[in-house]
Length: 508
Image 1: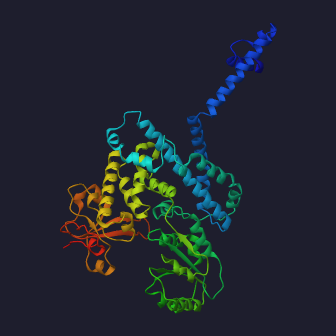
Image 2 (image 1 turned 90 degrees about the horizontal axis):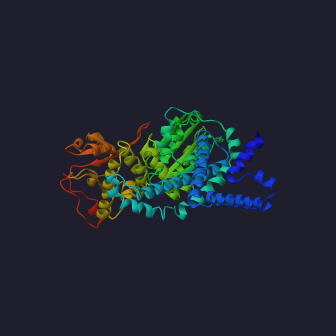
Image 3 (image 1 turned 180 degrees about the vertical axis):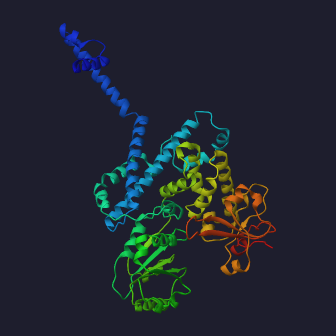
C-alpha cells in the first residue's frame, strides 16, 4: 500500500507513468522527466523562499513565535526575586529585544494597512485624514514602499530576538530556583498604572539592596537619580509594598530637604528602619554629615535611600546609584498602546493602531500625558472619537509652542502654566492650567474638583468659578493625583516672548 501511495504521489509531478517508461526502455524519456521534476522543485523553492512578500511573511510568523517565548519568560521573571547581577543584565537585554520586536510587528501591520487602504475604499473619516497625519506617520517611521526603516529593521529585530531567546535556557533554569514573590489581586494593575513598566532591573536592584544584611553602624545609602516625573518615588513606593521588604523593615520614614536634619533618633530603638529622603536641590555637606552621624548612632539596622534629580548627590551614596530615565521609543510605544486599548484587542481595531504613532509623537515620552490621554481614549474606541482627540491635542501642542516657545510635554513636566482651551469643543471659555495650590491654600479654600476626562466628554460639567482639574489619578493606594489649578480667567494669555509675562495670566 505504501508503494502505491508513493507511486500516486510521484505521478502528480510527472505527467506519465514511469513504470511504463521502464518497460519500453525509454531512458531518454526518463531523463527528461527527471529534469522536469528537478526544474519544478527548484521553481517551488524560489517561489517559496525567495519571494520578498513570502519571505517577509515568514519572518513575521517567526517574530510572533519568538515574542511569545520572550514575553512568557519576562512575565515569569517579574514574579521572582533575582539576586544574580548577570541574570538582571540578561533580563534587561531580553526585555529590550522584546519591545523592539513588538514595535517592528506593529509597524509592519500599520504598513500593511496603509498599503491596503490605498487600494480599497475606506471609511470616509479615515479618507479625509489619511492625506496628512498618516503620511507623516509613515515618514516618521521611515516607511518606504511599505518596509520598515533601518532603526526598526525587521531582520535586525528578528536577529536580536533570536539571539536573546537562544541564550535563555540557562536563565530559565536559574530562574526556576529564584523565590517567588507574593502577589496581590491588584498587582497586575499596579505594575502598569504606577508605571513600573520597564523598571524590572531597577526594582530588583533596590530590593537586593534593602534585603542585604548589614551590621550596626554606618548605614548604607542608595541614591536613585532621574529626571522629573520618571517614576522615582513610585519605584520606591512599589518596592515598599513588597511583602518581603515590609516584613524585613519595621517601618519607613519619609523625609525631605527641609526636615531631614531633624530626625528623632531616640524613637528608633527597635526594629529595622528604612529612611527615604527626597531632595529637590543640592545639600550642604555639613547638614548631610549631621544627618548621617545621627543615623549611625541609631542602635538598630537602618538603610537610607536618596531620591533626587541632582546628579551631584550621588557623592553621598555608599553603593552604586540607580539612574532612571525616560523609556526608549519602542518601550513607550508598547506602554501607551497597552494603556490606550485597555482590555480591548488591538487586532479588532486596526485603524486605531495607526493613530498610536501620532499620539506618541505629541506626548514626547511623558508618563502623565500618556495616562491622561489613554484614560480619555479608552472611553470610546471609535475612529471618529480618536481622531477628534488627536486633532484637539495637536492644536493644544501648537498653541503652547507658539505662546510659550516650549513643547507641551516639557511644560507639564516642570509644572509650568499651560493653555488647554483648544482641548475642549469650540466655542469654549479659556482653560488655563496653573500649578497646583499649596497645602495651606487647599486647607484655606475648598474648590470643586473635576477630572479632565469628564470635562472633555461633557464640557457643561465645568464649574463657573475657579476649580481644581485632575489630569491623572492612581486607582490604588496611595491614590496619587496630578492636579492643576484652573483660575477664573477674564481673557486668554497675551502672546509674548518674555518668560515672566508669558507665564502670567489675566485672572480675577
